[in-house]
Image (cartoon, rainbow, N blue to C red; front, side):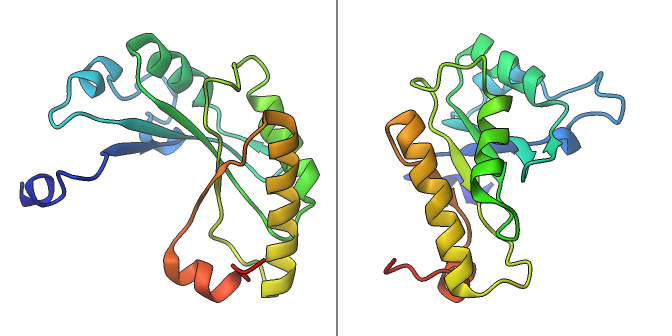
Length: 157
């Protein structure tokens, strides 16, 4: 596997959502194996939900399993620029209501434009970022693609 030899200097992570579980949710990835994986898995990104109205139904199980084996957890929420930023962040925080936010680094998955302008997307994303910073004391990680960011965000703002 040349990928692992070529990219040894980068952290290795796994991205999980309900799509990585069986349809009935009874089978999920083996977290004991994830913990033992070579090369080491440095973090597990796990989708909490989407916008304000959707919760990933397997997230609670993934979260507990990752905590049990001691993996670094990066809970992420898919952000909709067409929806109210505060409502979305309240939904994100509600999903994480029993978690210790001081132990987690929150992540916003920002990859959709939904027909909105660069200025609009930047404005609502900044609202979400500022809201989370006010609640948690730090900004979340913004996960995206460079091309999408360049085309859809006013990075200077």
